[in-house]
Image 1 (spheres, rainbow, N blue to C red):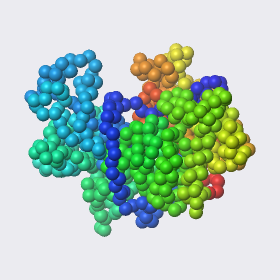
Image 2 (cartoon, one colour):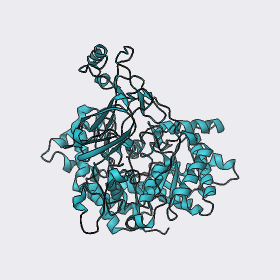
Image 3 (cartoon, helix red, strand yellow):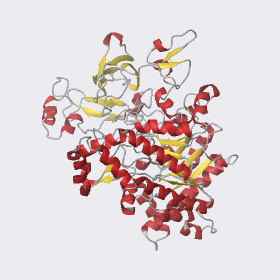
Image 4 (tube, helix red, strand yellow):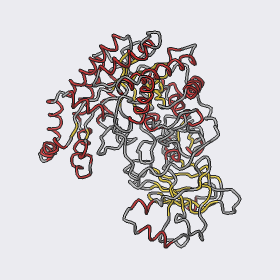
Length: 624
């Protein structure tokens, strides 16, 4: 049983949604000048009274997924920030391109080549398309540049009239679900309508740019979602003026306020009850190539979801401020001391005075599976260069603990007048209390640094005590026999969860790590957690879709909500403190059903309702 559960934990964060179209080519290298956020950070009292009350005594945090173009999460008011890369396209049906080459490409057996020619685009420093090939260019096949939004979101995105604002001279066309309202469109401001959202999402294509050849190419495109807010409340969402029409009401459209209202009100409202926001997936920490402060994503970049950079740090701090939540920041594994100090300084400047910051070095450095191995292998090599005579895993854990301590000391120096606001987190593996002992005692590092164990510097030990089972080749026949039963297998799934004592196993992990945390005088918190029903190995293939569907349905079953209540109450009873669920919103798929909700308006989701009920029944049970 322990081996099985260890496997579960190693695979725990494999739940990030895969792209319905490969996430294209990261060819551009931005060096973008910095701009300022709208003047709303730190949070003002008028904006945050309701949200402060909503999460003031909350015991739960939540992980937020990245704002990917296929996500049904309504992160931004300007959805260009959550678009795909630009990718080069051609059309064999148009006469304004290299038709013969495009026809040949269209016959290619690889359908991806028909969608993306794979050629190098001419982009400026901010990621905008600077030029397109002339009609007589026979060396290049592409003639257009396209981005997509909400492609793969299964139609779970806003219907209505979208406004597109842009600078420059050229031609923009729209496709998939988007139909341009030509009569309402003018140069620099277009309107398109999405009547019935589908899985096809929104397609925006530049077909001509810089018409006068004077450098005035199309740039600074903003795609503003329908609706607005009422009476200046950033958490209120109104489709139009009809629901904000009482005497004294003041409606503001998103077009009017998109520079101030960066985040969609429903996104903010749905997060507003959580005490902390873990930003690991939102910032694409596991994929980060950021080392120096100048490497970070900048505000002018055309999108804020590049996997190797993540969003600008200002953005996730602004998000935390909007709902008076504590940001849980995962630092990139290659971050320099200068990066760490600059981020700490920015955080101190922007964050509200009553907010804390949870600080964690990378994510699951103990984990050998991809993508966690990107950071883990890097840290392991750092450790082996310092302690070449120990096992690679010991070197990895001690180097991880060492860097966590170094990071923590820098941040507490920056927050010298209030160091208690910085909660330094030591991440560990729920299935191994030995790992927790290693990172807290850090014997190799301690021996060289005055015999001060790492536990004396950090504030909390964090684990991810998931519960559930996996379906591998050996279990396929059994699970398919469940599916053939009258209820499609639901009864058997929950019988198996009970019979396998998966909750009890998770409770055992909690108890083991609570003892370790107590022995080292640190808090026990959870960086991730929740159900873990997932396919493994060959069972991830589409030929096992019946099994994927069964596991997704189990996540929607009322009995899953009952298990969540028992699970979270068990965490409280065993002395755990802040618990960060994984995750806010994600679409179910072969790799799991990780979201508490499947889309932004999924308010009746079983897991979501259980989480809300737990927060209704249990306020924070520990002192600040």
